[in-house]
Length: 288
Image 1: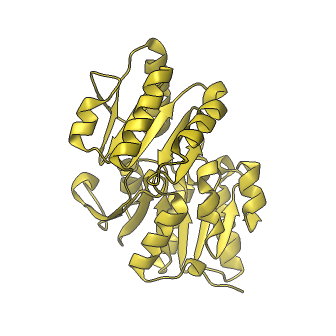
Image 2: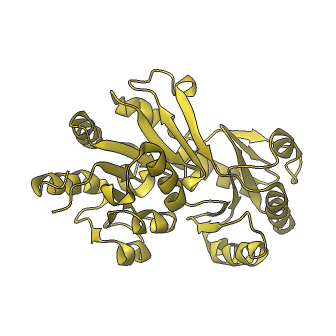
């Protein structure tokens, strides 16, 4: 039987329940594994402010490594954190180029879409309609994100802060996702700095990395092989993430493409503590 040293967890739809929270049982299992020397690693599309509450609730007694922005940023939080804002250390950043960023912004502005521009702890956005405000509220409800507002569709303030963002997100109605993803794919085919176009429920992300490449960078930093990692995920952004590890586990509630690619699918959903139950099964099999 294989033995895994590291558990890499996606958050939304995986470790988090439908209320976007870590259940008490999930926290208890993660703490138990961590206390036995199993490394816990969070890997999510969320930005740093959107994971602070989860880092605090876990309150691990060892450093907590995270791959954020869907692989574009790696960091580590100090043990037993009390103020994650000041207790975080950068490990790597993989940013979009300035030319690529401008073209994606212009694409969204031309369509009248709301565009999010990620720079470190800030999410810049220009909202020009009630529809934009509604989409931003949905995103806030999902991730607890706080937005920094720009005065122009061109996001001049964001570009002045940094012309090379961690990622750009084009917000839209669910019915527009496929069309926008196709348009961005065509736009970015000739742009070397854009590596991944990722579809969400009401947005499309543009990045220079993915969770898979981010996890590889983190594993190299930690001095472990990808084969030592078991990774859990549910969405489109988890594909490379679960393909490149020793065992990729799809959630029962996950997208079919993830289930098809995974080595195993959980018997329970995220709402039914699927991660906890699968980890317990692995412990019984002496795989952790």
